[in-house]
Image (cartoon, rainbow, N blue to C red; front, side):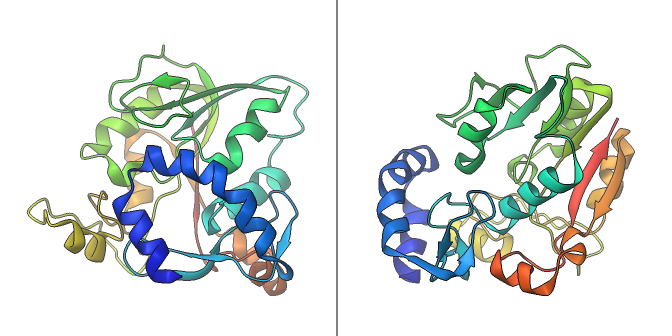
Length: 256
């Protein structure tokens, strides 16, 4: 199964993969029903989660029902338990980059959100836009979700500046990235062009860097106030295992 999923991820373009997964997902979810692991996003349980990874595959990380990964489930729990994202009686103006399937319909249905999605390629994007040149006015959004996007962007400084520009003063954002916390300094090397080699070194063939611990300070240099939230440390070990979370993953929560 791991070889099959690895082949699919590395050969089928992401926009097509998104459309195909909508059809296949209910079938896989039905076949894997059980009680070992639970997806907190929809509350459904399974005997196993699916493997995932462009290079090295991780076991039991992809939820059969929502197709969420560790980071998505962690973000959901943080938004639900630590913010008013789901409960605010006032409208929250949200900008969501590269919207994930597990969130898209749920957020669209929320009456308390004024919800806009954006991306260059995603079929789920309301606005097709370059993150380095956004077609939005200054100081527009109460909350910005931009997760696992910046590692794809050659000029991430410009992208961060645009995120800061369109966020309202007092606004909040969550900018998750794949991060190696053992690295003090972010690593990039544009001379590596072979896709297999890039997947091996950067974790995915279309990533341009591996972020280190200096990621948080780079966000601060743009002007954001940054909280490095180790949310798994506030959750019981049993639930971390049951929800298939990545122990120690840091949520970068930013404010303007």
